[in-house]
Length: 476
Image 1 (tube, one colour):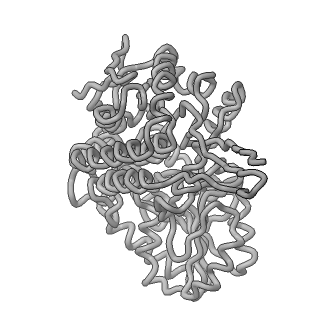
Image 2 (tube, one colour):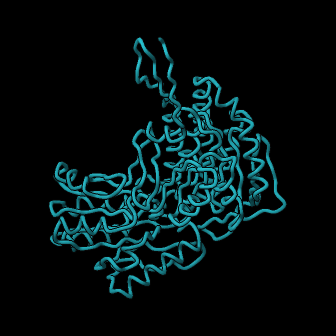
Image 3 (cartoon, rainbow, N blue to C red):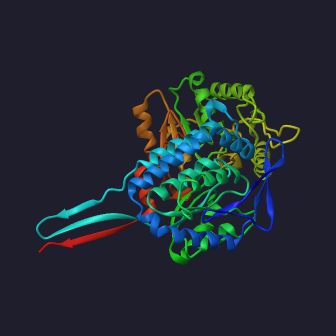
């Protein structure tokens, strides 16, 4: 049994009690984690505030070098981190189309190095005989990071590295379902960073750790990835000291397949962008609209792929899809599937939980549903896809946009130029053409409507960890 402590001010910190972390492939605990509380948040914020003045004044080249060192440390410990990710998430080591724990750790390494090389240059607005006007980007102070269970290490990197690059210090709270790989990352980072620059507080389900961070007067910004419901609670709590916010919230991404697509040629790609990580990705394709002329053929192709997909323990190299990450999420998928049956959904494959230990659910394709069913209207966050028939392009774009969410969307066509023009009509933060969910460290990513506030990645994401200070120097 692995034991995990908190890390505050560069020191391991225990708690009076612990909570278990479950391996979703077995349903059994593999780790015990310190159950922190609001007093530990106070201590972590105090450590971060103490470290901030020196860290924010550290030479830019030195901060950059330390972050590259952190990327190198992640790479040196890649096999260990991959195993921890698989044990706590169920994500396969390799995964469907290579989207697994290896990709999560490899992506974390790449994001660290790319973000370390980003710059915040001084912008000169005026420089004449009268005055010089400069715009400087300054760190905010202490950043609070609250991460989800679906990509725990990767999203921790997405939150932490730009915050540190901009000169902030950080307190991170990982999901109680998947804190182990993140704790190891923070431990590795603390061998490189000065004490107090990056602090870890872990809390059990229902603890006051997250709410305490959201309302804490010593935290200047919260970056949160997770559900829209929780994001709204954080936003309300953050009003006390007008915290800056970056919220990446729920998505129910629509993909629209035009009639000029060859179903056999596109089916494998569509299946991959929908089902990798068991559909437990905010920017997975979750509603597939297919033109009536190719509807039945594409339905059949997708069902054939689903039936051939290898589901099992993620530690086995041949596994493509692992279990759903937790029992509560599995129950939600089952409830959404039951609603689909009650509304006349045609189950082409799957549709049930696998017997035996663990939280396994068969890859499921459901045809003949429409808006009004839970599977179409809600984000299932599991291995189940509705395929929805349409006839008119203007109508289907309106249907795709008729959602409170607006994270991502895609158009699939043999005519990329036409697809791009249609894609610009989708109400979402990112549109992909003949692709879905492919994010990269230099392109901004974020949602509109109730899918979030702000963006992450690249220069656009980095500046969200800063405030603007205008400097005017009179020359007369």
